[in-house]
Image (cartoon, rainbow, N blue to C red; front, side):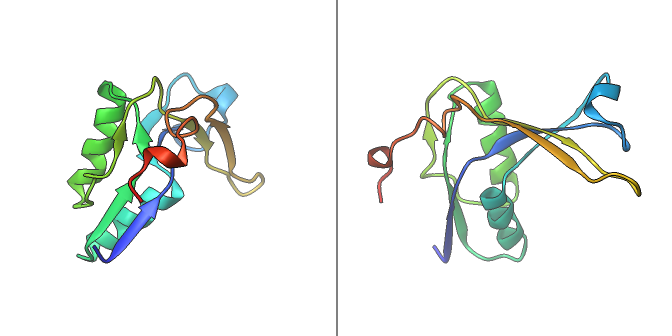
Amino acid sequence: MKVVTFGEIMLRLKTPENLRIMQSDGFDASYGGAEVNVAVSLAMYEDKCAFVSKVPNNPVGMSALSEVRHYGVNTEYMLREGNRLGIFFFEKGSDVRSTNVVYNRAFSAFSLSQPSEYHW
């Protein structure tokens, strides 16, 4: 493996267009997080890379893993256990207001993981 990234993958809920969170009645869903974004970017340049994290062993966690694998990132070292995936809400800014991000990570599978769980 050339590069290994370690961090939390989260469900990203983005408001459509430039709506504020309070104005929106729906969200576009995708997955993201700084470390997984780096791994995906490197994989798209055909670098051998892996992402290490912990996701719940449920359809949401498996969907997140599937998305990362889709881009060629190695996920064999991922932990699959816990109850929830971290979430962040994203509203894109406009000319007169900045972008706003609201994190909901408390008690996510990754936030509750312990260093001893990973095979360093």
